[in-house]
Amino acid sequence: MKKGFTLIELLVVIAIIAILAAILFPVFAQAKAAAKKTQAVSNCKQFALSFIMYNTDNDDTFLVQRNDDALNDRGEFQYILQPYVKNREIFYDPTRTRRGCDTSVDPTGRCLGFAPNFGIYSYNNGNGIFHLAESDAPEFPESSRWRGRNGSDFAHPADTIMAGATNDTNMYTLSFYFQTGDGTGVSALRHGGQYPMAFVDGHAKTIKMSRYSFLADGDDFDIMPENGNDIKKYCYNVDAIQERNGGYGKGVPCGQVADMITRDRVKL
Image 1 (cartoon, rainbow, N blue to C red):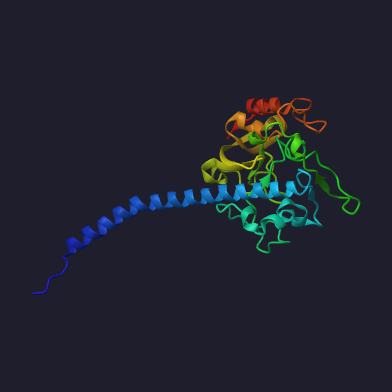
Image 2 (cartoon, rainbow, N blue to C red; image 1 turned 90 degrees about the horizontal axis):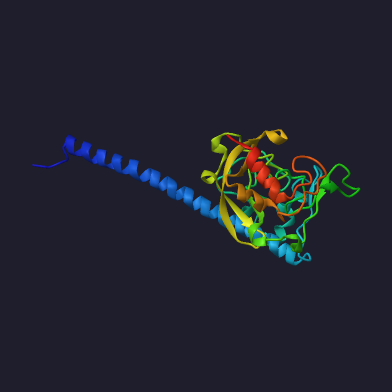
């Protein structure tokens, strides 16, 4: 007499498999997310190292970034730093899949995941790794350029953000504004809000970010650090006054502006 599985036995086996799958699938998902986060931090650190190598060849001075439609990608950090990275992949965050960005170098239009620190809170204030935007050369009359700062400008290199994960699109910035590239909902925050950041001294770590409105300056959506003290890490020098002669924080040291932002913002 041949023996086989009974229907009950098959159902029990299927039930056990289903239970194991229900237990293990979330674990696999968490492991996959953790691996992507680790890769993102690694990419961010490599990004920072490419900046440092460039600066070493450029009298310890950050690059000049241009924003011009005629240059597109070729006026920005992701193109200028290529001789030092020789691999565009380090500029991508593995969890950012958005497309529709510049196609002059990458025909797929995939959006980068990292950007330089233009300072708080606007990319035009001149309190990050770049000076205040200025008119470009005569051959690019409609564009702007941001001259990079010299290493001697940074009061606390190990506590000043150089670059990090961004939700911006071309021209990519790490200012609090223009971070709507992936929407404004909770899902816009990658890595559970733990954004990789690289610092001027070359080390990298994550900073907890959240969504805010900053209506004190008229913006209804910004991505900022949860901890107000981390906002100060966007300042090249907490005692320096922003270079822009106007706007929120005019005439106030950058560190104090960070405290003002912490006070005036509203969490979404």
